[in-house]
View: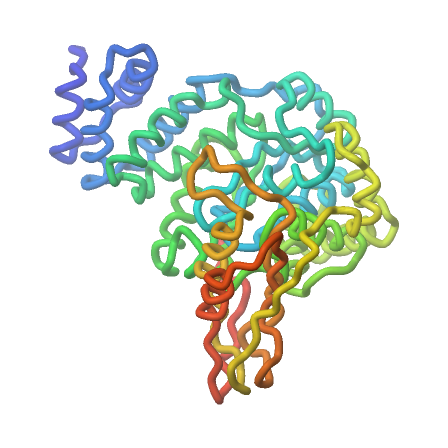
Length: 435
């Protein structure tokens, strides 16, 4: 069979044809070796953006990107290895409590996480608010900590899915980011490189999420589950609401403290509900529970017994951080100056816009607009009023924890709120489940 050239492959996808696994593998390998030019890959990405990709093509692209670097060998870790991935949101600190909770119930959780960019926060930035905590462990140390502690949380290394890094950079500057097959391949190539057996996906929906409407979020979640399963992994997705920040804290140190509170049985109800449900999904996939009910019971036992805190202490110590913060989250440094943003009128909060609050947090230094920006872990926002809450005139809607006052930040946060005479209809945190 005659092999098509790179130009012929681009033309075939432009015309809506399905590419073979071999063709996709050759193009990805060629991009890394230099035999396929950036502009040729850009043309192929644009063709895929308009023509789409079949499940078979998406699996082939995922595999090619996955195999472009190191795939971790976790065979020395007993049990079903399971991870969770969120598509990102404001106040989403779930992973910080989730990993030790699931590990305390006997399921190994190897987790490679990311940093915040734009209005969404990053798990690594939040963890690094813990004094001394390192997320740059070697592959060997990562595997050792997962084996000995049950979980470890690090950042992506240069050896993990290098093709994804190069392809994403091209997508970012050529308006091809919002292509579901390309998003699926990007997410799964990195998660499968962890050496996991199962994956729970938290696909956020709403103003503070990448996917603003339910239809697109459902399309993405369905594709992630299909392609992950075709790659031989057990995958489940939950669609969850991200119109309002999750929990109270938005920032880094304050979010980490709030997540650690969950391990003590405390913390905001919405954060606890999301965390426990995602943990339960993971325990069922890892075969550590028969169903959701038994999983939730195991998780509560891990909290009540102190086992979850103990795992977190061990993980923090193994990653060179101060383990005392697991037992006493108040040890984390949070900016001392507090500025309240108050209600101009009495009524019911009908909107606390996640996107606007997330952008305000970035503007005050809690996030980054560019990859090279430095994050201040101490600053942040407390979201004190949520949709459905009754407030009086002058009552604090949010509190800003700052190093210095900035009226423009206060205005941003105030503008995120809408207060009306009637309470809004109740909205579920969970929008759907895809298996």
